[in-house]
Image (cartoon, rainbow, N blue to C red; front, side, top):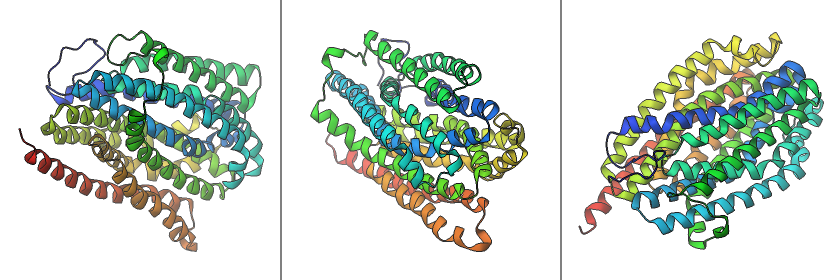
Length: 459
C-alpha cells in the first residue's frame, strides 16, 4: 500500500523491497537495544572493577528478578505496538489516536505498580531465590532503588514501541544515547568519587531512565503525525485497552514464564557459590548484547507483519519472515561466535579474578555458540504475534521452553553425574530448539488458515 510519508522518520513497510527497509528499521533498533543494555553493563563493570566481586554478584544476580517483574508489562508494550501498526497500515487515524493515549497512560500506571511491588518485596524475593547471604544486603539496596525508576522505564518502552509501529527507530536511539552517556558518567562519579557502591549505580540508572522517558514523551508531544501525544487526551479507551491486553498479556505472560524459569535456573546457579554467580552474571551480560542484536529482528518482524496484515498485503508476510530469519541467523552465528572466541578478554572487563573469568567462560562456551537458535525461535514468535496470535506462542513457550527447563533442573540436573554448572547451561539451547520447531508448525498452520479466510472472503 504505497503512501506519501509525512515524516522522514517513518518507513513504508507495505510496498517496495523488504530487505533494505527491514535493515533500515532494524539497525537503529539494534543500536537502541544495545545502548539500553549499557545501563546495566555500566553498573556491572563499575562495581566489578571498583567495588569488588560481592558487589558484582549483587548487581548481576538481580537481572532475573527484574525480568520476572518487568516482562509482563513489557509484553503490554508489544500489544500496543502491534495494535498501532495495524491501525497505521489500515489508515485508521482515530483508532491509532486512541491506542497512543491509552498505551501511554497504561505505561505510567504499570510503572507505578512495579515501583511499589519491587521496592517493597525486594528482600523477600531475594530470600526465595536463595541469593547468597553475603550479597543479599547489597542486592536488596540495588533492587529497591532500581524499581523506583520503573514509571520512567515503562514510559520509555511504551513510547518507543509506538514510534516503532510507524517505522521510527532512529529517535529512540538518539534519546538512549543521551541517557546512556549520562548513566556512565554518573556511575563513575557515584561509585569512585562518592563511594556509594551499588546504591550509586542504581541511582545513576534511575536518572538515565528518567532522561530517556522525558525525551520520548517530549518527542511524541511535538509530533504532528500519526503518533501525536496530547496530555489532555490521556484516558483509557476500553476497546483499545481490551485489544492491547488481548495481544499484550499473553506476550507478557510468556516473558514472565521465561523469566520464572530463569529464576529457577538462577537459584540453581546460586547454589555453586558467589564465584560462579559472579562469572555467570558477567557472561550473561555479555550474551545480552548478542541477544539484543538478534531481538531487533523479532521486533522488526512484528511491526512489518502487523502493518502488512492491516493493509491487506498478505503475500508479503512469508517473505518478511524469511528475510528476518536469514538476518537473525547471520547475526547470531557471527556475534555469538565472536563473543565466545574473545570471552577471556570480554570477561576481564568485568572482573580481574581468574576464577570468575573461568566461571564465565564455562557459560559462554555453551550459550553463545548456540544463540542463533534463540533468535530463530523469537523471529517465529514475531510472525505469529504480527498475525494476531498471542496465546498460541505463549502456550508453546510454556511447554517447549519453560516447562522443559524446569523438568531439566528437576531430573537431569539432579543426577550426580550431571550435577554440574554445564548441565544447567545446556538447558537453554535444548529448549530453544524444541520451541522453534513447535512455533514453525504453528506458523504454517496460521498461514494456511489466513489463506483459506482470504479465499472465502468476497472481493
